[in-house]
Image 1 (cartoon, one colour):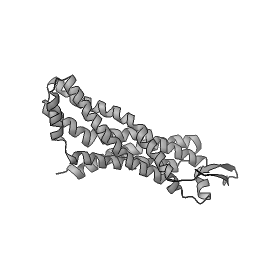
Image 2 (cartoon, helix red, strand yellow):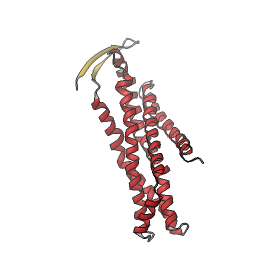
Image 3 (cartoon, rainbow, N blue to C red):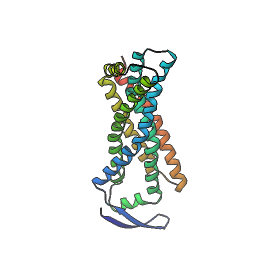
Image 4 (spheres, rainbow, N blue to C red):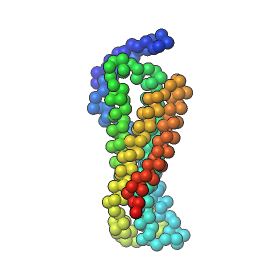
Length: 240
């Protein structure tokens, strides 16, 4: 990838210099890796835990095996899958984006891009928005499978449910609308996480303290918006 040297003078008279890499398709691939594959192990662990917790109330005799299976499938695909993944990725990826762009802002690398007639949105923001929107649904889909299987493991190993009956009930209760709504939520959450990270990092100022504040704001704002849009999307799909 070609690199370009820059030298800029700030309004205060300070001279800033360094190197920039030219943007190309590899930037989007890098964002897909960082925002999708890296957080996947965290999401898988959380979804397995969610599936096991969803099955445990039957131990006290509260629910029948059929009801436990239904609640496990619906709870993970509709709510736990996208929401837990979104909140964890907001802490992992949202903070990373805000810190990266915030550092570029306070070290005047973004100003240097503008000086070189390079659009900062196209170079820095767009690849992150695309990657966040595309990768979180994949993460949620994989994690949903692991979460449902986690409930099956607990149901069979700890609660003495019939394995074949549990899997049959899981298939019977699994509906396309439930899975699709979770994936729509995941895409929306991925866009929100990337947008909040880019927005707060891009507007960062005040040196290291400003970068830290931007990182905190990115995670908090993304988490609040995730919970808000989770309710709105659920109402859109399932309000009767």
